[in-house]
Image (cartoon, rainbow, N blue to C red; front, side):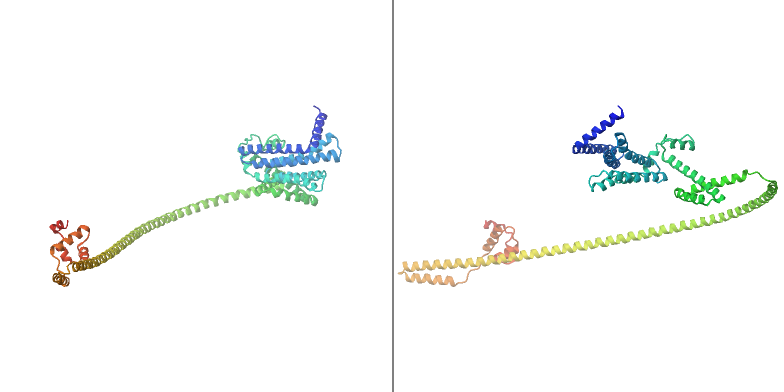
Length: 498
């Protein structure tokens, strides 16, 4: 399949898509959403970060929309051929994706990454401006211009969230290099190897140190030669590069430059005067070495004396510390005894408080029992009063009943008397005699109750009220307690009552 056939197929597909734009857009959207969901599911299962996959799919969708605008500009506005249109169609997306990948591979925050980030923003701005030219309405112009910038912004947020943890996790499985730094730098520079975090930092650090060293040596030469223009330019470059250098890197650069200058001075041939000066310096050095040896011997003797003095001081300090520890031990023992005594006093106080509380509870219980007994006594008195009232009421009822019975008897007797008067009018004398006897019987006082009747009444009341007390029986029958007590246990009276 040649390029013309491929371009012809793409053109036919493009015409079909333009003819059925709505259906193609819906189908593409559905496919894109399904693919994004599948990718997010797999990413969530593998890494637990589906947001990164969603961010990439969003960027690809936006870049695809921008690529469509590039194709319209190439084919309709510029009227380019199919080959040039295909190149123009893909050049923006390929360039921006390549710069994104390079920025992701660079060390976080390095000069190289910042350079590629600027390139990504620049390409996105140019791409948005070109795509905006294919807009059909004024509202579509800012939309087409902003979409590439939005894709870059979302990608940059994901790049910032990448952080150092992912690089460290990736570096745990990195290979150990068995070649030198120079060859390792060349292999990585040729894209033949993928460096880990440690290799990447080492290479960037070494490259920056080399550049600073060469720049500083050139700056020294320019200052020596008096080239102010070159000094100004190199100084500005030096300031820009030292922004990413730390103190250790600057110290390494200083040591290298200093070593270069010292090596030049060391390897320069000596004159006769310098040879004489060197001999004199060697003699002076020998004398100084002898004096230094004497001084060192005296210093060692002084150190030995100081060491003996320090040992004596250490022994005295140890004795003082031992005495201090003994005093502290005695103090701790005394404190422990005081604490034990305090605990004993506290325990006694708690026991006394518990005894007082127990006594209070006993007093309260006795008081409660006394109140209960008083209440029971009051209830008993009330019951007795009720019983007495009931007995008095019974007596009054009995008296009233007896009066009513007597009245009935009197009425009956009067009736009989009237009948007798009517029947025996002729028996006047006899009737008068009977009337006199009746009057005499009514006016004669009632005879006293006999002992048998009293005993029968007590026994009958006990039969009707087996739970009644002697006082209750006495109150009910109108008798004295001593009289009731006399007939209380007489069995023959009880038998007579039955």
